[in-house]
Image 1 (tube, one colour):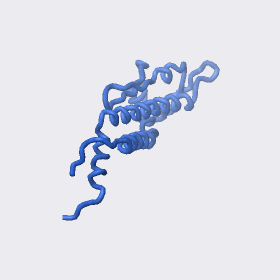
Image 2 (cartoon, rainbow, N blue to C red):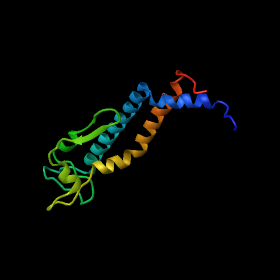
Image 3 (spheres, one colour):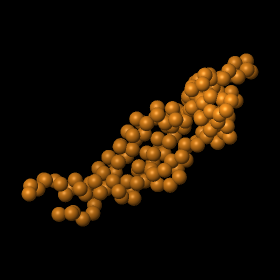
Image 4 (cartoon, rainbow, N blue to C red):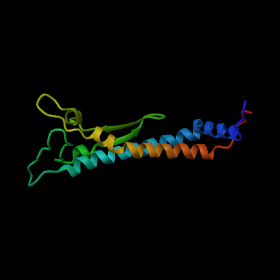
Length: 144
Protein backbone atom coordinates (compact mmCIF):
# COMPACT_ATOMS: atom_id res chain seq x y z
CA UNK A 1 0.00 0.00 0.00
CA UNK A 2 1.37 3.41 -0.98
CA UNK A 3 1.74 6.12 1.59
CA UNK A 4 0.77 9.68 0.68
CA UNK A 5 3.55 12.08 1.58
CA UNK A 6 2.15 14.92 3.67
CA UNK A 7 -1.17 13.10 4.09
CA UNK A 8 -1.11 13.25 7.89
CA UNK A 9 -0.54 17.01 7.86
CA UNK A 10 -3.36 17.44 5.36
CA UNK A 11 -5.76 15.40 7.50
CA UNK A 12 -4.83 17.54 10.53
CA UNK A 13 -5.56 20.72 8.60
CA UNK A 14 -8.94 19.35 7.48
CA UNK A 15 -9.75 18.65 11.13
CA UNK A 16 -9.26 22.37 11.67
CA UNK A 17 -12.51 22.96 9.79
CA UNK A 18 -14.44 21.45 12.73
CA UNK A 19 -12.80 23.34 15.59
CA UNK A 20 -14.86 25.84 17.62
CA UNK A 21 -12.81 28.69 16.12
CA UNK A 22 -13.62 27.44 12.61
CA UNK A 23 -17.32 27.27 13.41
CA UNK A 24 -17.21 30.87 14.64
CA UNK A 25 -15.45 31.90 11.42
CA UNK A 26 -18.06 30.13 9.28
CA UNK A 27 -20.93 31.57 11.35
CA UNK A 28 -19.53 35.06 10.71
CA UNK A 29 -19.43 34.32 6.97
CA UNK A 30 -23.03 33.05 7.02
CA UNK A 31 -24.19 36.17 8.85
CA UNK A 32 -22.38 38.35 6.33
CA UNK A 33 -24.16 36.36 3.61
CA UNK A 34 -27.46 37.00 5.39
CA UNK A 35 -26.72 40.72 5.40
CA UNK A 36 -26.05 40.47 1.66
CA UNK A 37 -29.45 38.83 1.07
CA UNK A 38 -31.21 41.48 3.17
CA UNK A 39 -29.38 44.28 1.35
CA UNK A 40 -30.27 42.77 -2.02
CA UNK A 41 -33.95 42.36 -1.07
CA UNK A 42 -34.08 46.01 0.00
CA UNK A 43 -32.40 47.08 -3.25
CA UNK A 44 -34.90 45.07 -5.33
CA UNK A 45 -37.79 46.84 -3.61
CA UNK A 46 -36.33 50.34 -3.69
CA UNK A 47 -34.91 50.23 -7.22
CA UNK A 48 -38.05 48.66 -8.66
CA UNK A 49 -39.98 51.91 -8.46
CA UNK A 50 -41.76 54.01 -5.95
CA UNK A 51 -44.64 56.36 -5.41
CA UNK A 52 -44.91 59.14 -7.91
CA UNK A 53 -46.64 62.32 -6.82
CA UNK A 54 -48.19 60.57 -3.83
CA UNK A 55 -49.75 57.83 -5.98
CA UNK A 56 -48.38 54.31 -5.53
CA UNK A 57 -47.61 52.48 -8.76
CA UNK A 58 -47.78 48.71 -8.17
CA UNK A 59 -45.13 46.48 -9.67
CA UNK A 60 -45.92 43.91 -12.32
CA UNK A 61 -46.89 40.45 -11.05
CA UNK A 62 -43.80 38.31 -10.61
CA UNK A 63 -41.55 41.36 -10.07
CA UNK A 64 -40.42 42.65 -6.67
CA UNK A 65 -42.89 45.06 -5.09
CA UNK A 66 -42.39 48.77 -5.68
CA UNK A 67 -41.67 50.80 -2.60
CA UNK A 68 -44.56 52.88 -1.29
CA UNK A 69 -43.80 54.07 2.25
CA UNK A 70 -40.42 52.33 2.59
CA UNK A 71 -41.71 50.24 5.49
CA UNK A 72 -41.19 46.88 3.77
CA UNK A 73 -37.55 47.54 2.86
CA UNK A 74 -36.79 49.13 6.23
CA UNK A 75 -37.98 46.05 8.10
CA UNK A 76 -35.86 43.34 6.50
CA UNK A 77 -33.24 41.90 8.85
CA UNK A 78 -30.59 39.18 8.94
CA UNK A 79 -30.25 37.59 12.38
CA UNK A 80 -28.15 34.67 13.64
CA UNK A 81 -30.25 31.87 15.16
CA UNK A 82 -27.52 29.55 16.39
CA UNK A 83 -24.52 27.83 14.92
CA UNK A 84 -24.85 27.59 11.15
CA UNK A 85 -28.29 29.24 11.02
CA UNK A 86 -29.17 32.76 9.85
CA UNK A 87 -32.73 33.97 9.37
CA UNK A 88 -33.48 36.71 6.87
CA UNK A 89 -36.83 38.06 7.97
CA UNK A 90 -39.22 40.76 6.85
CA UNK A 91 -41.09 42.15 9.83
CA UNK A 92 -43.73 43.84 7.66
CA UNK A 93 -46.92 41.91 8.39
CA UNK A 94 -47.86 41.85 4.68
CA UNK A 95 -44.51 40.59 3.34
CA UNK A 96 -45.57 36.93 2.92
CA UNK A 97 -48.66 38.09 1.01
CA UNK A 98 -46.38 40.00 -1.40
CA UNK A 99 -43.79 37.21 -1.66
CA UNK A 100 -46.27 34.41 -2.37
CA UNK A 101 -49.40 36.22 -3.53
CA UNK A 102 -52.95 35.61 -2.42
CA UNK A 103 -56.49 35.35 -3.70
CA UNK A 104 -56.57 38.90 -5.04
CA UNK A 105 -52.87 39.61 -5.48
CA UNK A 106 -50.31 37.95 -7.72
CA UNK A 107 -46.95 37.30 -6.09
CA UNK A 108 -44.30 40.01 -6.01
CA UNK A 109 -41.33 37.98 -4.77
CA UNK A 110 -38.35 39.80 -3.29
CA UNK A 111 -36.76 37.42 -0.76
CA UNK A 112 -36.24 34.38 -3.00
CA UNK A 113 -34.82 36.50 -5.85
CA UNK A 114 -32.51 38.20 -3.33
CA UNK A 115 -31.28 34.81 -2.12
CA UNK A 116 -30.77 33.63 -5.69
CA UNK A 117 -28.81 36.77 -6.59
CA UNK A 118 -26.68 36.46 -3.42
CA UNK A 119 -25.94 32.72 -3.63
CA UNK A 120 -22.56 33.03 -5.38
CA UNK A 121 -21.31 35.57 -2.86
CA UNK A 122 -22.51 33.50 0.10
CA UNK A 123 -20.75 30.39 -1.20
CA UNK A 124 -17.55 32.41 -1.71
CA UNK A 125 -17.77 33.85 1.84
CA UNK A 126 -18.20 30.40 3.42
CA UNK A 127 -15.44 28.85 1.29
CA UNK A 128 -13.06 31.65 2.27
CA UNK A 129 -13.95 31.22 5.96
CA UNK A 130 -13.41 27.46 5.74
CA UNK A 131 -10.09 27.96 3.97
CA UNK A 132 -8.93 30.46 6.62
CA UNK A 133 -9.91 28.03 9.38
CA UNK A 134 -8.08 25.11 7.76
CA UNK A 135 -5.01 27.22 6.99
CA UNK A 136 -4.71 28.49 10.57
CA UNK A 137 -5.07 25.13 12.22
CA UNK A 138 -1.77 23.52 13.16
CA UNK A 139 -2.39 21.77 16.48
CA UNK A 140 -3.62 18.37 17.54
CA UNK A 141 -2.12 14.91 17.47
CA UNK A 142 -0.99 13.39 14.20
CA UNK A 143 -3.04 10.39 13.03
CA UNK A 144 0.19 8.56 12.01
